Length: 69
Image (cartoon, rainbow, N blue to C red; front, side, top):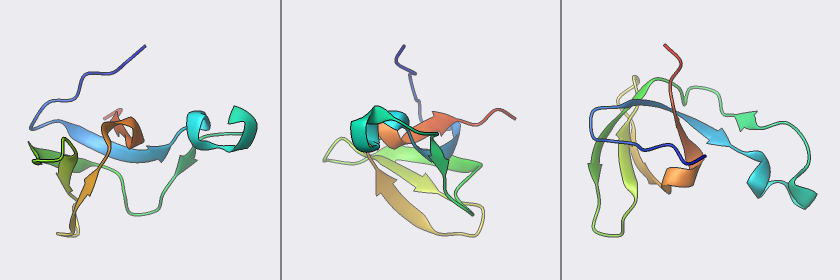
């Protein structure tokens, strides 16, 4: 199932099993990359996310998941 992300959503950065060798193993959550705010979709179609520490980076939507809380 595809998750729909919208501007203002709180997201976590997750490397899902689809990016792992043979699509096996557990998804990987990166430290300090949870509870970010999706602030815009850039001209390349990637999500711009601002993290609680003030860093801002762009990511493909497939690497983002809505935060559980």
